Length: 83
Image (tube, rainbow, N blue to C red; front, top):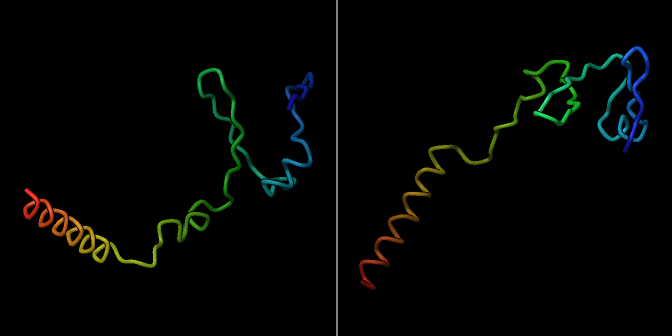
């Protein structure tokens, strides 16, 4: 999608993209330079609240570790019997 830059350096984000990403007048975006590629990234109004629950899981970390050890043990036992 091509857009033009005004003499003042302004760009207009097309309505379809504003709607898709929930951008409203007054919202803040960050312009990131990836070495030849510019990216416009929406900035959460409250980054702490926006990230709340991001890492939440139904399983506890302890449960996941115990399950991983159980799978490793079963794998090792299978290899000992086969080997």
